[in-house]
Amino acid sequence: MFFFFTCGTQDFSGNINGYEHLKVICPNCHNAAVVPIKRRTFFTFCFIPLVPIHWGKELRCTICQYHQAT
Image (cartoon, rainbow, N blue to C red):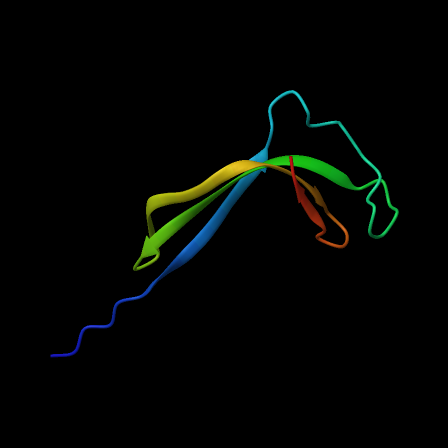
């Protein structure tokens, strides 16, 4: 028998409550498309998130995907 297991990391992100309408100018592409988000990185086993590795808040541009930790 052969069993195939996958391991890796997965990012989960979402809006920060109270800051949904805040827009900031991106220092990379100069568009007003930077939004504050909360991001969590999990260790996954067979695509199931098991252990949180990193969590924090960051600013992310929705156009060029530039991000900066806060």
